Length: 112
Image (cartoon, rainbow, N blue to C red; front, side, top):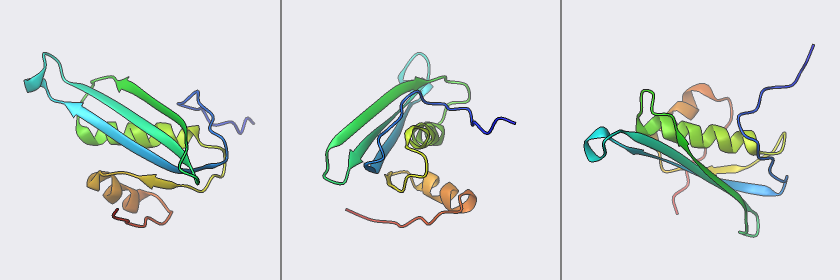
């Protein structure tokens, strides 16, 4: 039996990542001819150096802002070194609520 889990990202980050900044964006149909979504994440080490960043366009099937935030989180987490312990920085209240409902890991709110 194969214990490999399919990956969604082709990036493999170093174990020194301490913080993952994520963001998603959504441009509704009214402001453009077609609606569009994008996501981005940036991996930072404990000294504040940017180790890697990534962004991409998301297919616009059922587009909405939370979906772009979820894509950012999943792609960032999938790029991490296995068994990493990190801080995820987001400004999306809906994502924080979902995290608390479905993920068995502590979420600590921090304002800066």
